[in-house]
Length: 117
Image (tube, rainbow, N blue to C red; front, side, top):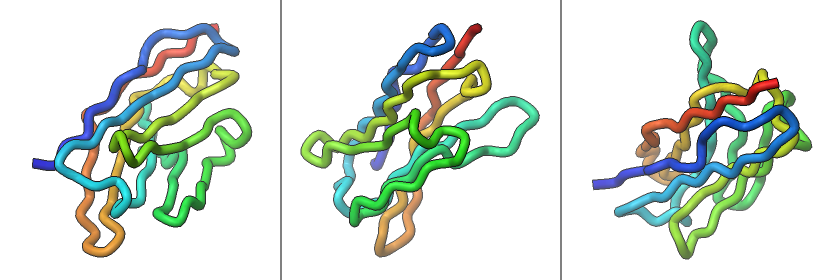
């Protein structure tokens, strides 16, 4: 069964850094477009960053220049490097993978990021 498992969330001071990881099992990352989303209570889920199969990355305006999405296909792992964190980055972060040909979509369970000032 395809599964995405996130790790790396936690509590960090404003201005600090975190790296989120998401390991996929029973799947080949090379066949998927990947993304990170986040959600805070009372707000819509927000696309933070996405990475196409061709390697094109797209970022939300709120994280441009601070966050970097990447993947290591050999490890079936995707990452979200977060720098210069702000309190408004506090959210539950979810990894997402969509099969580029068939549209199968998979979600991780979420990892909490809390940025305190």
